[in-house]
Image 1 (cartoon, rainbow, N blue to C red):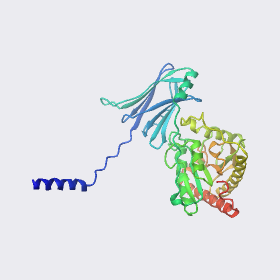
Image 2 (image 1 turned 60 degrees about the vertical axis):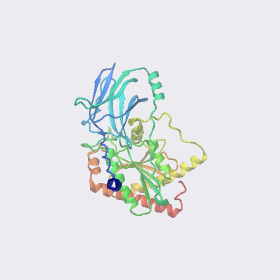
Image 3 (image 1 turned 90 degrees about the horizontal axis):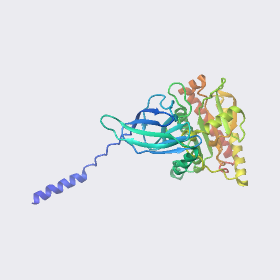
Image 4 (image 1 turned 45 degrees about the vertical axis):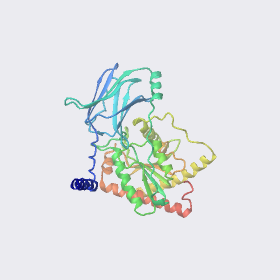
Length: 401
């Protein structure tokens, strides 16, 4: 009896001492194929998955869209998947929407009703399948569905200040991301990847001095809404915000070169106006409902703050043009303005830096060049350093934020 008790105790001690066996990491489900079938009376979208997932489908208006939210999914769909529609569906796109969340946004030609939205379990060698069935409806019924199934926007990430260190904050905003790829370049290159790489390089260069801290609005292939990007800058009491883009122009007329945009209710020219309109549609592309987006609060204090912010913004924009001139090809009119929503923080000096235009073969070649990215990020970091040195010398750092 004593011997049996000793063995049992020893076994218990061994079990306690043995390291816990790590749980195997769960494989992320993958979307491997997709197709659209049907006509104007009933249209079906089918997406093949490696495993079943929970989904949530809802509609958004103006433009008419159907949105399907999923947990994290790796999209391995064929090239050009979603570019061509059929029946009620004109096109669809997909990607990461927030950490741990993916999204499919379906553009529809007219008001539709979601007749069915479900996922089939895999069976008899067939993959799991996401199925969306749409039927036509009237606008009134569609809008009622919008009200009852409004999308919830994910909270904007806010970076905590390390160890209470009160360094001036620069927010760098790599445009687009996740379900919103931005402009397409040669081959498989997309704007969202180019600007993210540029932003990370720029972050390292700015922080190298130890005098400033950088917050990225996104540091991976995740979607962040335009108001969410502005909130990140304001919540971090940013002293400067730089939004990075590399767009395309459908009628380029040989337009190329880096361009710096500042905020203005009236665009400086038609080209700036077209670009602002395009960039301001990013939330619609990603299936975000903006019907409840609040207007900015008006008032004397607001106007004074905006005026001071505008002055600081102008100073940095001119400095950026000067320093970029030696490292990058500039647009023939490198300093422009338009109503970009991402620049609308009233208390954060903000510029949008268009690195170049992917619709230009010359610009696209430079944007994918390692040497050019190094030179250009060095020039932008120099402009940032000069801007802060001037504000510190003038005793204005901290007045806006």
